[in-house]
Length: 144
Image (cartoon, rainbow, N blue to C red; front, top):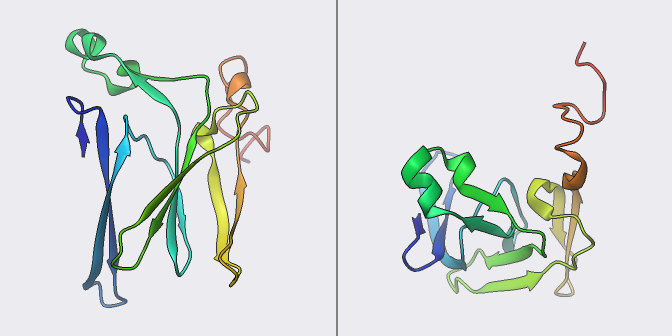
């Protein structure tokens, strides 16, 4: 849920068994509006990227369209590593900003290396070019 008065979001992670029984529920508070589109998991962590999003409550009063209320800010996104065990420890790391906001980052794979490190494979879209050349399939000119 998002608590706009407190300017924070609560991220809740539910894990289920193969029989769809709830195994664990973990929650963490994230700063600002959490607009999360993908995540990955290792045996130790659930990993999320939170792009920098500004909200305009006045626009929502007039429009009621969430897409027109939110705006990506041109600054660094944050990588959140949420421990999957009962400690519910959250580590947040700013992603070095190279001029591209990580709003469309998609995870492919993630794993623990065994020495305390986490490796993530991901792809991203250059959001600077999205408005100038809309394409639902960036890797192909047609889906046929």
